[in-house]
Image (cartoon, rainbow, N blue to C red; front, side):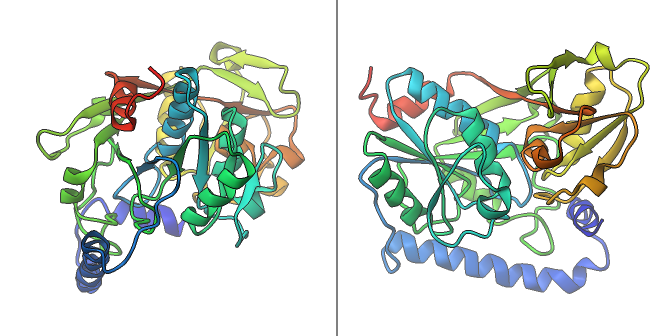
Length: 334
């Protein structure tokens, strides 16, 4: 697939990069200029009535932001806050801010907001203009006293109180070049301005991160599969022994899911799809059992079958990232 091929090319530098490196220079200059204009006030960021926590990354592709957003929303609620989540709704067709629910149409609001709505007990709103989405959420839910932006590190139009950057420990920063010659939306030095860095799959990380910044480790944990056709049914990895297994993944880094499946002792045939892929029943015409991520599952519910299983995961963060966030917010709830 084209997207997978491009992602592989971003891990090194070859002759064809000579055509793209000048474009990367232009992209990097424009990105830096835009950020500078916001920093000096020539472009004005919009400040919302409640603090905003942005969870994003500096590289294209999935790094594990969504599980971290869900973790933080749950933890803030436990500590007395009333969070709301905003997202661009990537892959969705909605142009105006609107609420996403666990049964919303993923073609309209995007797959990640629907997944988040199923994971957190707080409102989730989408909008291409995140500031507008945040204002709409606050009007509809005046009890919300903190907003978490799923992605948006580069959405400088939205002022933020806390910035958390997520880094994929397995892929790092690729060849270190800006788009399209490499995976970077912003240079690595941008991480020096965030409040915290969270490294997903830290055991695989070989990163040269800015000094003196708090760095946290994140692992995605999950070993129980839930049936798509009958969510009351759940099984563990051992229940798939001796069966024909197909593992599918339409996420930013499908290999992460495949590695997770293998670590559970499951031998499967792997099928990678593009990130945010809009599945059809014909895409999953496999015999045997079909294993998928929760993000894939929200797009397959319309044609769910008894041989389809989702693997929910939860983020485990070390050390105390929540303490840092509460301190940044002023720890108003003790």
